[in-house]
Image (cartoon, rainbow, N blue to C red; front, side, top):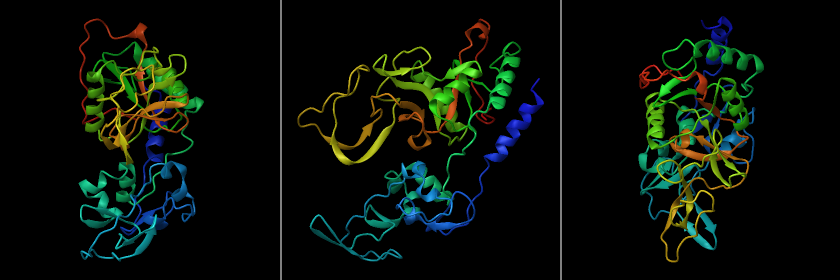
Length: 354
């Protein structure tokens, strides 16, 4: 039976993480707390406009990038667009898009409009567009860092159901061949996320092959998740490779696992990186250049793997001390499912995520 205190804790968590919409103009965005609205163009401009400082928060400024304005040769009658003159590297550019607008196709779009345009939005951070559409600067909730009471209650709930289950224990749901727990309320560092998973008889998740990875992506999409999750990969100095922490096996590289990144500058693309124990190969002479690269970019201690909403839940390398939610995998082998137990795919209509 579920402890009463656990039920109360989970209900309280749901209430704490419920957000409120801001009533701002389409050219504005609401600060993280309160009802204050500021211009979208004032976010991450090194001047704090929000009383809570959320417009200059490092978490937001990490991905808040508006493409440079590009010159156009004619005024095409876009409302609120004014021709301006700038001097860049000795070039006198006439009729740039106004500040807060971006050039896309043959039109100057406001950032709000660009986020609603499939062509333009591909050049913007999906997380930035999500905030602009919701008109609210959304910061990770601080302080939900796996208190001793919370971990004890959750571990107790899992332990109670380990011996009395036909499928996965409480907090876990079967996805493919594994019991996984997507603990969305918590925002913790990678080491804390792993500590939490181990306290509930698991570890941060890994994928044996693309089938397992694909089933998880399918589940997350059907459940309409938007939270970022830590998984069990990190760059390990002992193996000199990106490795899974649960067994130190090397992580697969390249497609279809790792995320694509827009870098804005044309860079010559090297051959595929297939050796997990070496640095990526150098580009061949005459190789074509592209404005996209593929994670992982970093091969040094302090970088861990995450599934992020910004990158459509493909794997990305992130600083381990940043805050994400734990994605746990049950590894209690002594209490595994009985031999021949049927494996039921999860019902995305009622996902048991937290």
